[in-house]
Length: 261
Image (cartoon, rainbow, N blue to C red; front, side, top):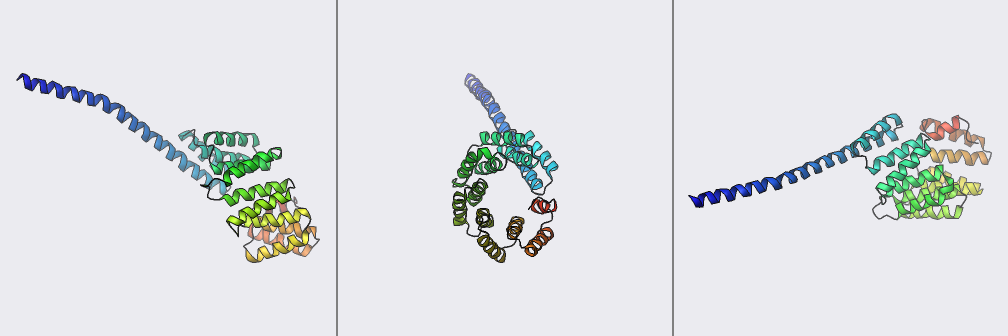
């Protein structure tokens, strides 16, 4: 009888210990599950926000980004997208804070570096060197799926500050990765145009349009080149194509508003 009682108390002791250990484990599992749910919610809302952003539905995009950050306030890609939205809304101070926050949360993310570099290039020309550094961080990341984009953005920004040789080098790097990458091809043509090599620019652009589908950027560049060469018939033709095929583009809006001369 005493032996049986001893076994009973030993079993009871082990059951008590198991209860003490199991509770923290269950709490940890529940906490991990909540964390996973928060991450997935933030990810889904950010992806939805991106879709709305690229459709130009900025108000809905902002709502979705807010939901993402409500779900997980440390989700870097949400701040990255919020930076792009605020940049589009010309809220430059807010966008700067958004990108800086995103970089702090994910300092190695190449997508954030590329977007932050583009923002600095477009809105803070005094920070152009910093912008180029962000592009290079993105382009040299072996996990970045579109390094040609970062190299092309760097080229565009170098052309913007009239560093034509440097810009052409970046465009060539992009084309060495993806030989028919349209933005880099257009960048090379724009470099000729900016330098005043109008005949070369015109010839290369005609060849580009023969071999590639037109884009708002290529048609706008064609308009500028033909205007510079005083070819009004060609100007009118390219304006017609731009308004017909890309009426909602910022390039078409610039033409309608008389901002291109």
